[in-house]
Structure formats: structure tokens, C-alpha cells
Amino acid sequence: MSDYLGKDVFKLGFGLMRLPKNADGSIDIAQTSEMVDRFIAAGGTYFDTAYVYDNGKSEEAARKALVDRYPRESYTLCTKLNAWNQAHDEASAKQQFYTSLERTGAGYFDYYLLHGFMPGNWTKYDEYHLWDFVKEQKAKGLLKHIGFSYHAGPELLDKLLTEHPEMDFIQLQINYADWENPGIASRANYEVARKHGIPITIMEPVKGGALADPIPKVKEVFDAANKEVSYASWAIRYAASLDGIITVLSGMSNLEQMDDNLSFMRNFQPLTEQEQQIIRQAQEALNKDGSIPCTACHYCTDGCPKNIPIPEIFSVQNRQAVYPGWDKGKNEYTIATMNRGKASECVECGQCEGACPQQLKIIKLLKDCAGVLE
Image (cartoon, rainbow, N blue to C red; front, side):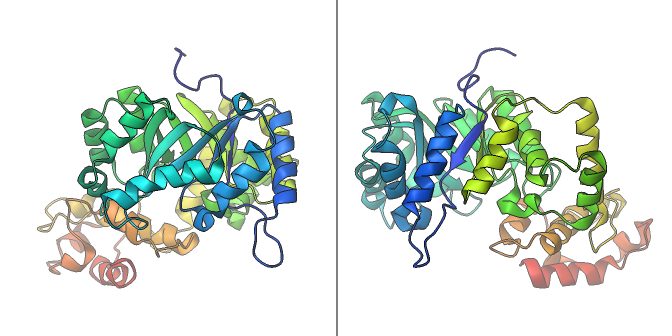
């Protein structure tokens, strides 16, 4: 593989979003510091926080557990600017950068992200002139590498990377459960990033912890292969085995999770072809678990007068039933139906049901999906 930004970075990153807590709800700085120590001792360097994490307490914890305790050149720190739910105008959006510098005491940020691009909010970063703002801070030496984190579909990603070739890296949600999920578009977004030659930091490799304790059918697949390793190890190694990856972020919440992750990432080895086949079996088990037995043949979509992506909607609904999300799947649904018809727009013409080899009651199922996802 050719050289790229982050090629030699330790492939496990320490995500500071889900830090251990004390009984009163405050961050356990003592345990966090021990986690930092073990991470750095194993070769880890990449720490990831954000202005919005834990109402700023994550950035403060980064200062106490990391910045105040280690030489600045011994680690890299990433944080993020959120323009859509933590800012009400351009000035307040830009102030987040200065507040993050003050909270962390880091002096500069090695990596900096415009945070959480989604279909309904990405224009805020244009409106507030934040692309130019981060370029200006980079020119001043206050930011070393700039990018954005992304939760939308491949068409918009291609547009943004084409319009902003100055971006140094991108953060994407990638895991084996979402690789073909139309609501996350892990594979499609990864392929767009590779086309543009932009390196990737991976978020949600364990899908918010869901893949550390997967559904029974997936556990059966992994247990048959190797009962001695954690379920999380399959997920994190899967993500880290991709090309063009800077690091894979794990939001570790205690020393046990840190030790487990380091046990297989300290001397990381990409998945073998045999292990990749086991991952494919786990993906098949996930797909079969859905409550709507759609095979995604797409016969139903040919001739749909409203261009409704029926299999994609069913896929989002099925995955939401298995792994309930913070927004009940609404953002995934928005991505899957972007520039296409929504479930509620079905005119009940019946064309789809006549074409379905599974004889699904598609009209009723679309109504059910609309009630949950819209």
C-alpha cells in the first residue's frame, strides 16, 4: 500500500466519548488516567474527543488525564466543532474552537473535524464559513490536519470531497453490521473516500457497543470459530483491516475494555481470508434475523411510480429492530430515501406485490415502516 496520512499510526484510537463515571455522574479521572497510561504504554497515540461530548467534560478529562501528564509530542489529539446543535450563529460556532483549546490546554490540535454531517445540517458549515475558518487555523499552525465526520450517503460525500480537496482526512461509521446497510452506507462511503484518496478514521466499529454483545445467531458464528476471543475483537479487527485507515476509534469505558482491545490490537494482524469468511457468515446471520424477510432482489422497485426504495427501507427497519438507535432509525431512513420516495408516499398501486417472489404484503409493511421511521 502506498504511503498516506496516518499509515503508521497505531490502529486503535482511544475515543473519549464514553469515559468511566463516578457514582455522582462525574468522569472518573483516576480510572481514565490509568486507561491512558495503558494505552500509551502499548503504543497508542490517537485520542478523540469533541466540544459536545459530555457537555465539555470529555475535553476537560483529556486535559487532566492526558495533556497535563504527558509531553505534547507523545500523543495526537482530535476534537470537533459542532455547528448544528451547539451553535446559533457563526460567532458561536467559531468560538467552540477557542473553547476547546482552553478546555484541553493542548496548544494545538493534531486532527480537527467539522462534526456530524447529516442530510439536514451540513449546509450550516457553509452558512457559517467554517471550511475557510479551519483552513485559517491550520495556516496559523493551530490545526495540523483538518477533516469532517460524516453520517449521510455517498452522493453528498462525493460532492463534498470534490468541492473541498483541502480536507486531509474523514471520519466514517464503518462496521461489519452496517457494511451494506443503506441507512449507514458504510461500504459505499468507504469506496467514495478511497476514490478521492482521503484517509479515514473509523467511528462506531462496535456500533455503540452492540457488536460487543451481538445477537445470539452472530455469537454462534464467532463461538464456533474461536471462543477464546471477544466479540468486540472481531468488529474492531474487521474495521482495522481495511486499506487507507488512520485508526479505529473505540469508546472504551473501563479498564477491562481497554485491556481487551489492547490484547488484540497491541500487535495487530489484519483478518485472514478464513476470518473474513467468518465475518461474512456473521453478516448473513444478521441479515436473516430481520423481521421482514426481504431478499433485496429489487423486483418490486421496477415500475414503482414513486421510486420508493422498498428493500432499503425494509433493511433499515430490520436493523433498527435489532439495534435500536438514539433517533429510532430516522437518520438512517433519511439517508436510504434521499432523492427517492418515502414509505408514506406509496399510492397502493400493487405493482410491487405482484412482482415480489417472497409474496410480501409490501403495502402494509410500508405503512408500518412509515409509522416507525417517519
